[in-house]
Amino acid sequence: MRVYTHPGCELHINGNSHVETPERYPAMLEGVEKAKRRGANVETAAPVAPAPESALLAVHEAEYVEALKEASASGGGYFDPDTAAGKRSWEAGLLASGAAASAVDGAMEGEASFAVIRPPGHHATRSRAMGFCLVNHAAVAARHARNMGADRVAVLDWDVHHGNGTQDIFYADPNVLYLSVHRGGAFYPGTGYTDEVGEGEGRGATVNVPLAARAEEKDYAAVFSGVFGPVLREFSPEVIVVSAGYDAHRRDPLGGMRLETESFGRFAAFLSSVAEDVGAAPLALVMEGGYDLDALADSVAATIQGAESADAPDWKYSGARAARDAREALSPYWDSLREG
Image (cartoon, rainbow, N blue to C red; front, side, top):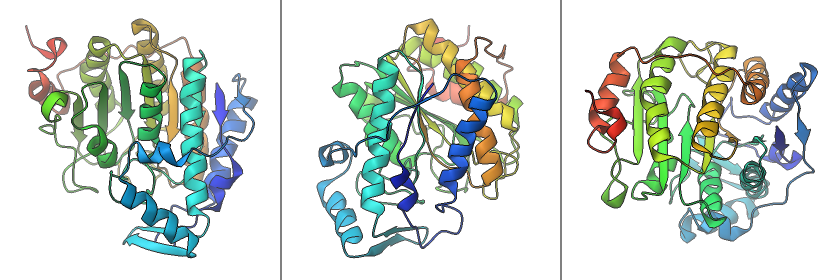
């Protein structure tokens, strides 16, 4: 596992959040060290270079990118009730996106890779910041993979919140498959229903599976085995970018879910197995949420160990309602989801 990061990611200050704080960054790094102590083969690359502004402009509107840059240059600014920029946020955003793109490079070179970064990114749409997110690093990574020659890229998001920004950016793109399992209903940001399947040429390339509060690993296992696995194998991506959020952990103060630390390791092992089955590059993981610091560190370690594991969980599709509803909504677009 290659780890791509930069200490500049700690410099971002979000004055509107008491949980998306600089303290998250050393907790992430402690997770990397825990994985090393447990025997994981981890290589921490030299600090990454910032992404060029053109990488942001490939997924965000120019007016928004300029507003973000100006907010930082003026000492900070507020974008929504949860999201603010400080004077170093532009710098941190470029560094985080640089790490995400580097994780794709590492994966395409044959090594599972992890962009250990903050702030998170998957709520940032083409034109606005929201939900602690300023720049959509997973989208930058996916676009970078396409620019590097990958014809088909998948972005799989297991953060407890729906990645509405990533969905927005690729909603009409048939070459970037977006898959998300998240807490549904009125839970923030209130998007990610099963009938959100894409538009135009991208219809069917958005896969949403909302779960009820207090969902456990067995509920997620039904989604991975009954929806994500079949769709990924049929789509056969060349690169899989993972929006790796840890706020569905049972100890997280925001998520309201019941995942255990080891659950994230099994997610990574499952996806690594799928990547190998379809001949994709190893995983390119990009950090998203996770706000209990101890749970964050432990879950990062579990993910790294899982991505290296040769033992994928033997999950079977059980016909659980959330997975069944998603299969029904998506069956017009995917042969692998049609019953009988």
